[in-house]
Length: 235
Image (tube, rainbow, N blue to C red):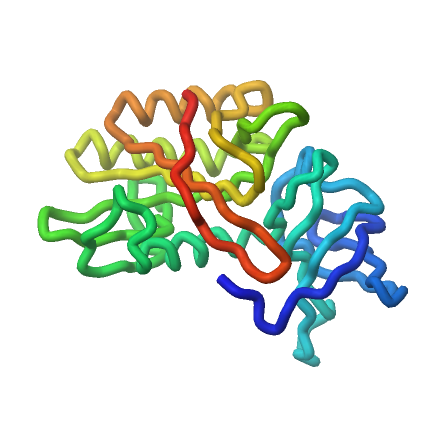
């Protein structure tokens, strides 16, 4: 995924009301831009840190740009815009970069399913039957550790998705939880049990039910982002 037009650089002044960020561009321009991230962004931002944003010329937009990438307090780069995760995964799927999911004949996005009225990120159709793939964007890192964690805040929605996947697996339908690790210098991912023990328990229960858990790491720069390698999952 290449950024077109190229991202612009600035520094973070503050993030507030979840979806707003005040920044100063390298030319000294003060802007309020959209923060497309519903999480806590724990360990993912600090005031004064470098950020990169996409600027929009759409006059119908209330805000002139979107925060795309940020430099973390630990010197890593993180994809702040969680809306990029599904596009990254789709790009990787179609390019055959996720070996465990190769060979599908059709890809569908946002397909309704499940007893709790969910929507799966991807339904992949194979000759032997479908696979349901749920994607989560991971940006929570820690100092002196190359193991990232998910989630960065309590997520009942995330636990619900795991229950839905587990129900599919018990019926003999292929179900996959895919962590898109949008953080540089990471070698593994784990459930953040210290933040959301219910999610960690739901993940382990889903694995016991037959849900596959995959993690792929991203190469992140101001020029573009792409998934490059499979990471270890530590349960």
